[in-house]
Length: 509
Image (tube, rainbow, N blue to C red):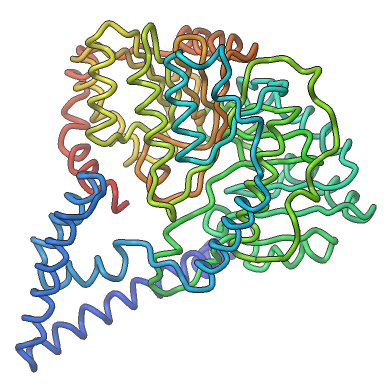
């Protein structure tokens, strides 16, 4: 009874209740007003017409336009108002001011890598176009002197992460979507507390929505009492606010600017299979040691300063170490933000698929793709590129699973090969192209990652770790079930009705 009561009184339940209550009051108020004042209904319908014209002319994905236009046309009195309240990002003035400061600071301090996109062994290759886009449009700089280690499953990262944290001498920066008490987080927290007590600059940032069921509302205050500088990203409030739809989905650990970790795993036990809710949890990540780690330092400081601006030079955090003895291809750390208007993650994935000449292999927990991405996958398969996608066999969200499976048939008919990871849930967000380029990071193949969330990852060019990525892909194919048209026919009745409808509304989910 106590557990049930605690759940009913949890922060998320109360917040959702208050938001629904506000929505109900708004709808009820509109109904009452339009009965008494007929022109209210006319004004709201006119607003819906204006919003529809705005969507038609807006430079955004047609899938997002359609997802909003359908409910607006079905419910013209409420639809336009809901879009105004919830349909686009309105950046608060203070946040916008901080963003401009941070961006100007990056330009002023010339925080970038060796600018080696012009390197002879990249220029002229298909990968050069991707490198060039990421550097000049996404401000993702290329680094040469970096060792890369690939982790095929989250279980493998824990020992290295502990060892790296223990080696910290100046600072530790960590940024995660989810933090949950258990073996993984408790072990790491003890190290952070000790390092903070030793005088290191220790900072931890977690997403308030991602961790809302796991830690108390003011958990950041508890961490600060240990000497850890902490921030709960975009704290939950029970009011309509479009900025709170944008979450920090990134996964970053930086030690002294020399070592960085990123990938798909969060600070919770399921990511290292200490607990098994959905069978074996398969995640992937990379460890960078060398020049490339600096880029993740800058990413963290930028996000920190967006919401808690502080004076000071980024360059004071740059390690004075010569990494020129490291020769292992190139790395290009990158970030994606809903506030810039550039869909970096989606554009990167489409470019990798379009530029593939031999094969493109993909791990993704969710396969909710826009028309452009669907077309790229089908065209790649039709031009004889070996296109393979691995999705989970055991879902963590059933309605997302239906949406994912509803896309199988169209892809299979075009020649794409699809596998379901039968041991459990694959949470990895990894792509490999032609054995020369790989992306490992936090970006799912869905609308939330492409358009709503702050994300990050690392592009690997001709690194030794790419061979490990490829080996992991083939090992995963072997232990997964390959889906065919017969499977779709036998299961189509289960997914054909609800899947397409959910796909239509996916940008709103």
